[in-house]
Amino acid sequence: MKPCTMPENRFCKTQATGFTLIELAVVLVVIGLILGMVFKGRELIDQGRVKSLAAQYSKIIGASNTYYDRYGAFPGDGCPDATPASPAACTEPKNGYLSGKELGAFWHLLIDVTGILESSDRESLYGQPRTVFMSSSGMLGKNLNWLDLPGGTQADKRVCCALDKMIDDGNANTGSVIVLGGNYNPQTDCWSLRGQTNIHLKLAP
Image 1 (cartoon, rainbow, N blue to C red):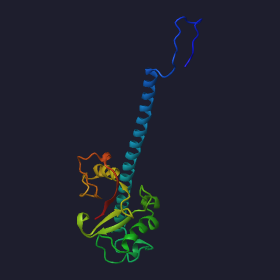
Image 2 (image 1 turned 135 degrees about the vertical axis):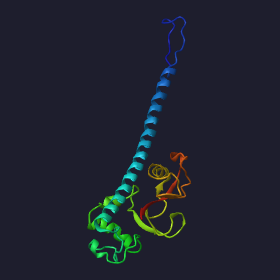
Image 3 (image 1 turned 60 degrees about the vertical axis):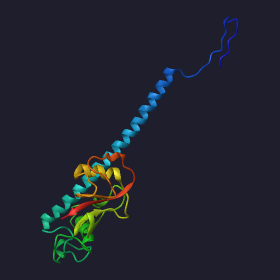
Image 4 (image 1 turned 180 degrees about the vertical axis):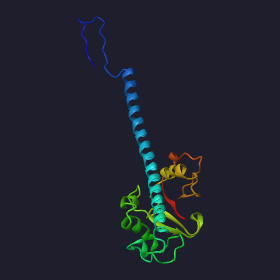
């Protein structure tokens, strides 16, 4: 508060200092812009994760098909050992499904033997290496191979839902993208979902 003296002003009044309404409005606008940029940045990051996951899945499927075209079987099919020295070492009957040691041979053949994929192509967005397993029943079906994340529920529901809408049917429990406990459909706002879940991506056949 600034004092004033009578000689300077006969009608002396105390003058208070502080923010004017215009200054407050400017501050609020700036804060709003900053928050808007933060939320927009997070949205762009999340959308980038969806696109990255879709590209990774497409690359793995493409690699599996490339291997099939070259060697006449899916990688790992008919392999008696999880670390075959070459595709020619997979001499057991082939049925188009992977189980047992064939599951490990899938990655070994694609990454270590043929070099169709790199080891980084197996890593998920959440830091764990993807695994392959065969379903036996339920919504995943019988005798189907899926890409999975080890350790259960580690994937962001929002990202899973958005991926499902991008490359599949948008339903959590059907199609090539199965999200256990996803509870969403094509009309769901994916970015309103909360929590983590487990996502399965159909591999073969």
